[in-house]
Length: 85
Image 1 (cartoon, rainbow, N blue to C red):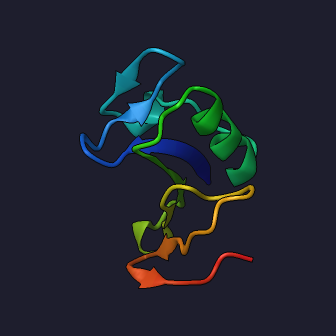
Image 2: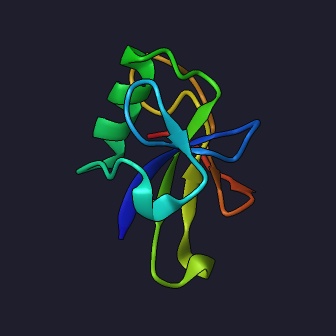
């Protein structure tokens, strides 16, 4: 499993604070979705979503921004809207 940040417009993944890559294997891998979202907010990557990627892409989960914190949002999980807890 990999936890990545994906730009919603370009489809690129965060490689580091200033670089993006089209290859998920070169992207920054976070310890948790919360850590990825904290990084997203700290670097002001507001168009990025948190992507939890599994070996089988059918199980991938994409959490649209904003994900955590005081924001009110309903993330999209594999195309299905779910409530934030």
